[in-house]
Image 1 (tube, rainbow, N blue to C red):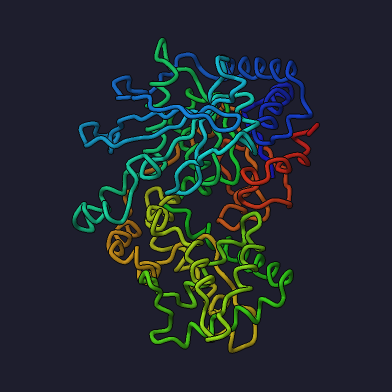
Image 2: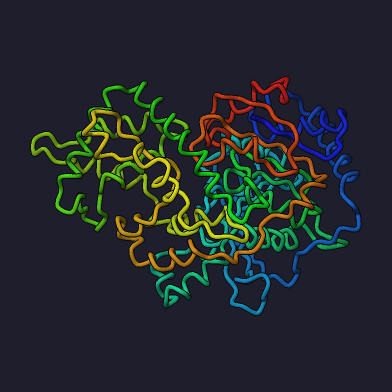
Length: 505
């Protein structure tokens, strides 16, 4: 589905913006010519100037400390490091500062060109921006027309990363939770505004930039539209629109819609690889027969049937079903009838909790406004889908064991060694009710910033149903059933080439 948006936009306005959306999200630039792109770029900026009130004020703080680091070259790209000092709490700038890291990416053949700026907002929460190794995929297309900024969102990568060790050093669970409450989309957007003020100038106000938000990055982009639309030339979203933005917490609705999609993806997986039904049965049986109901791994993780089911994370990503199938292929060391190290190491590789604990702790909070998530995925599973996802009962009944999707459960803070000491802090955040509103529906309802959103049909995060629950800034819908959640980043040549909105790709 592709959603192109702009309030009271005319047909000519959409034709102008269409060219920009196609160019950014797809890499099939071979269908367009240089002069044509330049004309479209000029037209888009004229459209943006007409849309945005000139009286809008920027929120950047020019007192932000900024340092330029090293520059390196990888095939086709020049990469330059930037570091900033930003307040932990933007509402209280006297709080301790944290580091924010941004990598500037410029195509080698565009150095010295006066290009507009594109800020890429990474999926997550809790994952750093990608590290380019060459000019390929979507980056090749983006750097043909933009100076690209890859921002490690606070708490990730080189932006004062949250680790289990430094979080425990904060002290009590209450102090840990108090620190973590400042790592949501609103703080990420406030960080971005300080970066914009530093890098794009301040007289009479910083220049606008474009956004490309992937998955959770799309949530951040919509928050940006709520609080600082004057900063934005255009917004492109891939696989991420926040649902029910006026609800106290949208998590219940999100997971209630997600579970049927997860079940459907499981059926597709077993239809493609019917022999894996028996392989999964054997694994679940083996795990359930271990002392304590799980296999204790050398790092302390407890591989239980429910923890094994988390491999369903793979079912919604490009190539995920194949990777899961090949992992199951070598599940056992047949000589000793034990799970192989190849399998257990592969299972752990799917679980990012030790290197990216912020994802597990903050995942459901992205749906919260003035209410608590209260372990929504777990509650909905137990009350509405318990029988569907009972692995041991499925083995006994001879039916396929269903794997779960992109979800976080409270028992993960028991089964995973790296999360055990964070259990109390996670509980405090799961029951927190005073987050405050994340989005402004009144501002979004009057949105004048051009927005295009690609939402993929083969999706396992709780995002598929958002075409019904989209914020007011989105009006036009186009469906495409062929792609997975990471389609734009992994297979960009195919992402939008068949959408009617994006012809002639």
